[in-house]
Length: 300
Ligand code: NDP
Image 1: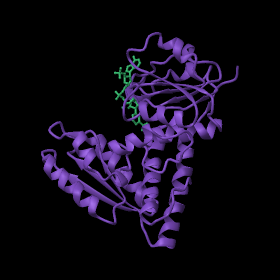
Image 2: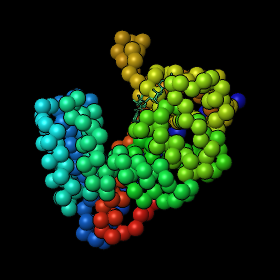
Image 3: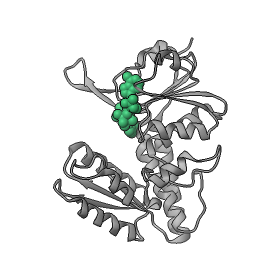
Image 4: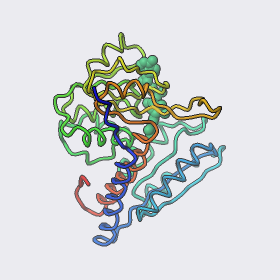
């Protein structure tokens, strides 16, 4: 059997960013509305600083306004909620992203619920979670959908065309990735099973899948012989492990070299799902700015 076709998330994300940039320019020219993304970082976690910086940089590159808000590690929850209230009321801000994780003394759920659902470009507000959970098959995604799951579904649709009738297994049931991915696949008319740490005989279940999405956070956990020949495998995992040269490297949740001998399509790590997350954040921000300008949802 031939090797899997690698799904180039880096190239797809670059193309999506280009389409978003075009949409931004059209919105500015047509309606005089410049999409604005506010990022909020509490504390100085180095990884979070890198993420926030790159989100602000991409927003600016695509012609959006980018508002960078930093609060000290010991900021109170009330201070953070006050900042969110200000951003909710700011008509120049169409998307609010609070970088997670938050310091332990702050109640994450309360903070996410404080973001106005129409500015919730991460798609984590309970109203948006509920919208995704109750969406009808094929209905438009005209509300913010979590970025990484949205990226997975875009890559699958691009690689496979129609997903209708396919059997999908999603390994991982987090609210951030696994559950929303499953909802998106259900909307696309897949027959979906969600697996987790208590699932019995996971290898056998995985072997039933035409589409396998793996989001568990365990390096190279899912082996090649768990994969049905020709299946599409989306590896969401990002794990840093020691490399042979004494440094470290990133690997996914799927044993890549084994999987590429069996799968039909496969996302690499890095360069698969990862780059889609920020591109989808920009996509969500553009959609919310369009909505504010009175324009209908547009699949770009
Ligand atoms: P969580 O830790 O929140 O969830 C992990 C899920 O995997 C849980 O549902 C857990 O099951 C399940 N799981 C853990 N061990 C096993 C096992 N042995 N067998 C079956 N299921 C298992 O992780 P996230 O969903 O947040 O992230 C998953 C991975 O995706 C991570 O590597 C993360 O870095 C990556 N990620 C990548 C992103 C990107 O590309 N931009 C964005 C977000 C995440 P249970 O519920 O039973 O505990």
